[in-house]
Image 1 (tube, helix red, strand yellow):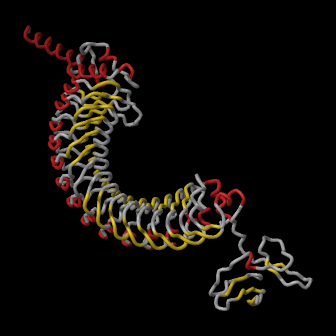
Image 2 (tube, helix red, strand yellow; image 1 turned 135 degrees about the vertical axis):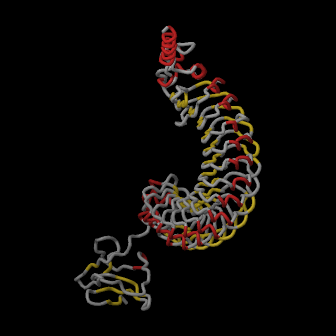
Image 3 (cartoon, rainbow, N blue to C red; image 1 turned 120 degrees about the horizontal axis):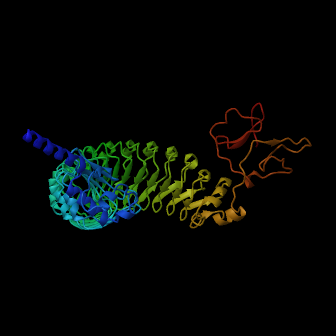
Length: 547
């Protein structure tokens, strides 16, 4: 009987231990260190954290899962810390490595508003978190190197270290993180070459390393990411050529290699990237021509090859890229005309063509671009009249056609978009008067001084705005004034009032010759017949020559 009672007592004690001591001591002390080192009293939300603040050791009825941002697993071990945007100011303590069953550590500033300001190094002890799956420290002020033993985190699927002040190279041990799906370390000061071992992370979906000081070439191992959707190495010092192996990344949606020192030509093999939506290689040292094969990228939204040394003609076959909204080819050595086939690019919003050697006329079919916002083609060799294509572009803000050889009148449709604030037409061969519809630009343009200089217009645009100088006369109307006192019937070309006395039409109007008479004319309709070389008037029954 005594033995049975003894077992009951021991069992009762064990039950009480489970009941009253529910948190692990290592977890408790690690969270206490985190609270103290990051100014926990001034966190945005610290409900429940008095548990670790006010106790040196775990008290009875300790429940770490009751603290804001903490989740525990079935073993009552801390498995998740989510203190994003919570005004953490200070350093990550080395005790963070004692959270042996931690899977998620999120202390990012996702609002980009200093809502967290962690500083100092990422503690090396973090490599002890062998179960860690997600580490997000984005947007803090962390400095120093990435832990060289980061590869110990073999369960890691998400590593977000962007927008800090990290220095040094990316550890080669990163290749041990074979389950890694997201690796983002953009906007730091990382240097050195990109380790080829990253190619071992064949589960990668997103690799973002832009805006660092990385150098060397793009590793050839980057051809082994079967699931990758986003690859961004822009704004570094990467040199060499674009690896042909990138064409194997069939799932790629975004490819950004811009603002580096890449050389060589654009690989024709990249036409296999049929899911690509963003292709940015601008601001490099690329040479050669635009591959015609890229016309297979029919899902492309943004195409940017500007500020390179590319030459040749714009590819008419790119008209197949009907989803394009951005076409940036400026600051190269392209020649030839704007392909008329581009009229099919009806989703176009930004068309940057400036600083090339493009010639020929502006296709009238671009009037289909009803979504257009910015059209820049300055510093080229464009000729012919500016087509009257802007009337169906309600979102148009910018038109730059300066420094070409364009002729004729300024099209009246430039006065239609309410949003137009930048219009540069200077240094062309424009002539003639200003249509009355252009008066709206006097109030909407940010500057009116970039229209008439270097042209041969009837007046400066400033004088047109201030005093109607150079205003085109009103268009010819079909109104007639019957004069019954013996005077000849006369055309009313000055509004609705009848004009007394003879009129010299050459002083007021110039009619465009027509090959055929207008259909369904009203009495008094006038046109100039190109075959007869006569001004014809409809008298209500038949067409009568005026002379």
